[in-house]
Amino acid sequence: MPKQPAFPGLRNAMKKKVTRRELFLAEMDAVVPWGHLLALIGPHYWI
Image (cartoon, rainbow, N blue to C red; front, side, top):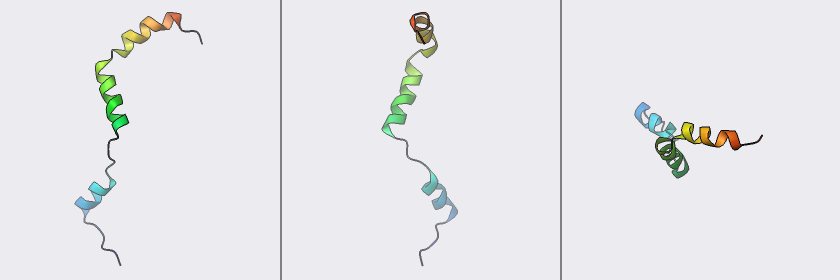
C-alpha cells in the first residue's frame, strides 16, 4: 500500500508548474502597454 504524503508534501504535489508560455505571457503583460496599443488599433479594426 503506498504511503500517503504529509500535508506539506501534498501542498507541493498540487502546485502547478509555471510553463514557459505562461511566463512569456506574464512578461509581455508587464512590458507592453496594451491599453495604448488597442486605442491606436481600434479605429482601424473592422469586426
